Every structure is written in C-alpha cells, then in structure tokens.
Image 1 (tube, rainbow, N blue to C red):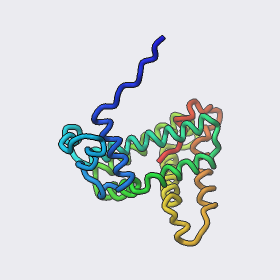
Image 2 (tube, rainbow, N blue to C red):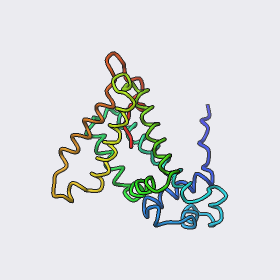
Image 3 (cartoon, rainbow, N blue to C red):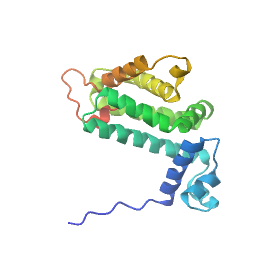
Image 4 (cartoon, helix red, strand yellow):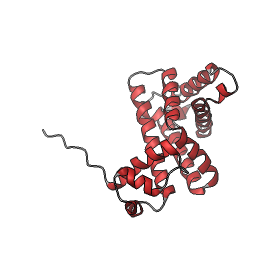
Length: 202
C-alpha cells in the first residue's frame, strides 16, 4: 500500500513560517513584509497576494506557535512526562520565542484584532481542557484563571524576572507544576479521555 506524501507547503505556508522566524528573531517592530517575503524566498510583492498586512501574518504565526506548543507538550504527555518536565518544556518554548512573546503582549494591548485573537486562542485552550475531563472538576472561569497564571509565570521565568530581583525560581516552578497538575487532573469519576485535550498551553 502506498502512503500518500504530505502536501507541499503553499506560498502562504512558507510566508507564515518565514514570518514566525522573523518575529522570533526580531519581534514585530523589527521586521517588515519585505523581509518576510525575502526570507521565504519570494519577491516582496508576493506577500500582499496572501496577507493584508503584517498584523495578519503575525496572527497566522501566532496560530502556528500555538499549534507547535500543543504538539511539543502533547508528545511529552504521550511519553508519560510529569508536570516538572512539562514546566521546563513550557519555559523553554517561551524562552526560544522571547521577542515573539513580547510582541504578542504589547500588540494585544494596542491592537483590538490581536487582543481578540489572543482571547480566542485562550478560549480554545479552555475548551480543550474542559473536553479532556478537567471541566467536571473546574468551571471554565477556573480553568481560564489557571491558564493565565501559567502564562504569566512561564513568561516571567523565560524572561528571568525573578533572577532580576536576585530571587530563586524554585517556588515559581513548583507553582507552575501544581497549576498544570490541576488542569490535567480529571474530575471525580471522569477518565481523562484524551491527554492532548487536557494540556495547559499559553
């Protein structure tokens, strides 16, 4: 039996990947559509055949980032990783994308479209966790509160904010692990049907 080969990436896919790399390396303000197109191997005018503006491709790169984090954590969960391992993977992913994360935080305060996309991303995460079994023990609001705490702590650890104050990070890592444990734990009598659905992501 022949296994079909994966579809070749479209020009749009290549532009999104190039944009994600640009935003990771230089942040939103540090790049432009010409640099993104060139990094993807296209003439600058190609960009506008696929995206309205730099914000549009930033949002596509954000969705790609979200999917990648879910994939990384999902692989770890399937291999039986504990919360401490998930914490380190989450911090590492945030650290690898510091400039992108800084841009996301700033833009979500300044741009209504980015703010709405960030809220939608968070709601997808809440729904995934609730479907995974945690919803029987926690309300959607309670899940969202825990996700926001995870997000803020992961960013703070990735940025070295506690180290800036001359403080250790043991308590923050322990708190992150506890929060992730709460989100992965199914409610009474509710088996965790799908480990991917119960993954906390930011």
